[in-house]
Length: 303
Image (cartoon, rainbow, N blue to C red; front, side, top):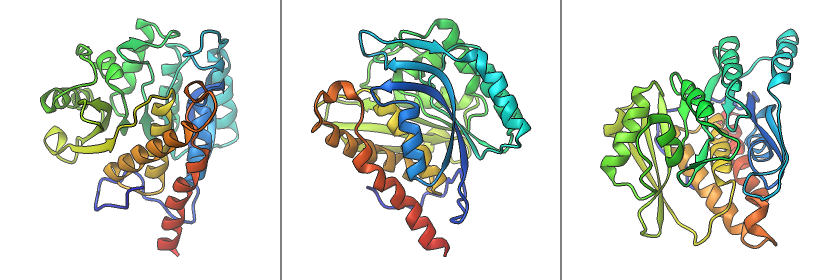
């Protein structure tokens, strides 16, 4: 795992004695680790109190031929009403896969009710140039409304295309193409953007970070990781969850993105050793200690 850098773009100043509370607005998937089954353990390992807001219930993720899907939209207003009656407070709202277009309104309600909470948006809509099977064009248009005001937006290249209207041109983008997409998302109102998964066929994967208040596109950071010779479903959720965990551990944005990339790469290597590894999702269990170590370092500095 990468060490701490001099990155000064810190979205969260961590008090080592305080446990931040983060709402994870994602689906719950029974098999094939992703969404809440990634967010809850990874954020918890980083010292966060994770409060799930389940947007859908799946028997297994959508890469399987057979799965059940239940949209939870109807239950969510009452769910959040109960939180408010109990005085629940939040330090972050981390959103991902949604069950309906109406759930964007639910997230925006949370933004209004928790104005001090960090808005961390993983606009989970598709991959490889295609929308996920349960998504529609209406849903994708609705998700676009989460860009303006996002403290952090974390799209892959398919989601960049769906958000901006720029054509999906595959994963092999040059610096000018990356800059165009980062610039468009910052212009749409995102405060910080990480674009994931640029693959230039050189054995490396690249993520790019740009911040409106730290030089914009012209001062973007390129993070390079060795590419493994296989793919696993759910790496995007593991990346976003570990990135958010590193942010809430007090790391700067570029450093957190570097940590997340190495966390996912290590977890993929462990996944390869498991039976049916291509179906079961990212086996990150053996890497959770890396996230806990971030908080232990923070605690040691804060004593």
